[in-house]
Length: 99
Image (cartoon, rainbow, N blue to C red; front, side):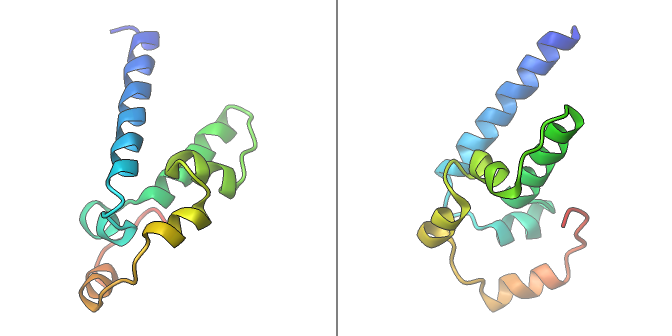
């Protein structure tokens, strides 16, 4: 597989992942962190880092809007719920590498 094709496939996979996460607003970031060790905010930080590697300066708000598909404050107001004690306990015991 050549690099341009691999890049196109990887880009398509990322677009599908973002679409899936936008559809699954019931899945909270804390759930993602507890199960997978990353969340939507991690994705936005990785997006910013990748943009920076290409000489582009993207701020947190812009990166989050790209990942969430809307301004972060709007997503939080619409979909974010208070974490349950069980979620908080699991989060406290999770080894996080992408904060």
